[in-house]
Amino acid sequence: MPGFASTNDLADKTVSFDELGPGLYGYTAEGDPNSGVVVGDESVLVVDAQATPALAEQVIARIRAVTDKPIRHLVLTHYHAVRVLGASAYAGAEIIASDVTRELIAERGRQDMDSEIGRFPRLFRGREGIPGLTWPHLTFHRRMTLWMGRREVQIIHIGRSHTAGDTVVWLPQDRVLFAGDTVEYGATPYCGDAHFADWPTTLAAVQALGAERMVPGRGRSLMSRAEVEEAIAGTAAFTSDLFAIVRRGVARGAPLKEVYDEAMAALRPRYGSWVIFEHSMPFNVSRAYDEAKGLDRPRIWTAERDLEMWRALERGEAANPAEAG
Image (cartoon, rainbow, N blue to C red; front, side):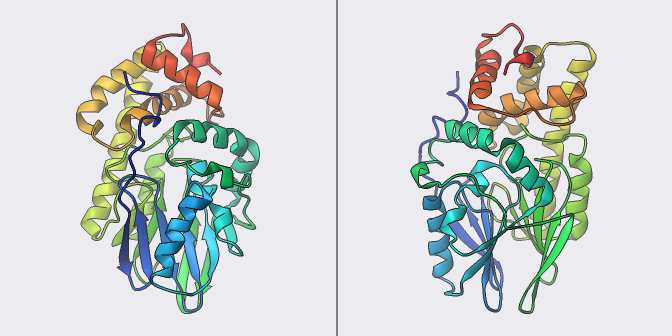
């Protein structure tokens, strides 16, 4: 029986800081949440803050090894705590997010913070340094362009997939994309707040950009068009395979626990080696089950609901886990 979520994942990861182009870097750590770095003519932009200020300081240390330019912008690809709660380390940076991401922070940011701290103890070491929720200074609707001197940075609310507010950062001159969790590589997409029916269209919009290098939400930096295409295809396959299984179960009136067991048996041979597979699947199937039954807006995860759901699906402790929480 696996431990709850990632509570047993306590081993430190090896960090990579890869240059994707002149002044463009991917900060990755063996499947942990990634960050991106864009060095402009006079300043630096960071994509995703990390989970705590202490982790953010590790990103900043890598930046300082390549430039002393000030960090003036921080883009949040979505609202999840592991992406945003380290923002206070970037003192003086303007925080940018989609308008939908800000709405989600207001609606469920506190519950998500408590939920994720319970699920990821290693990532939230140093959580006492988190001053509270992270709020953007600037929001945009659909798309904005930031000029960092001669460098054009497009910040795009690409569509609903991992969350309703998913944002990517696109460098058209360099053909480099920071994809957030719309795309993963060798890591299981977390779908607890997902929009499965929309995800294929969002991936098509990502693919249409024509990136030749990419930093996915999790997984190593991708250094060729072939690797980018592989990551998009893998994310599409996992999410569509999962949703198809769940929809079939819902159509025949199967209870959530039965559908979960079927999904685990079907998906583990192909995807079970991906990072956070065991962690993500109970959340993923729960959300897919809700969406297949017609619930468009994901229910809010709380620390209490997390544990109730986990015990129901992993241990069969609840008669009706679909209603837990």
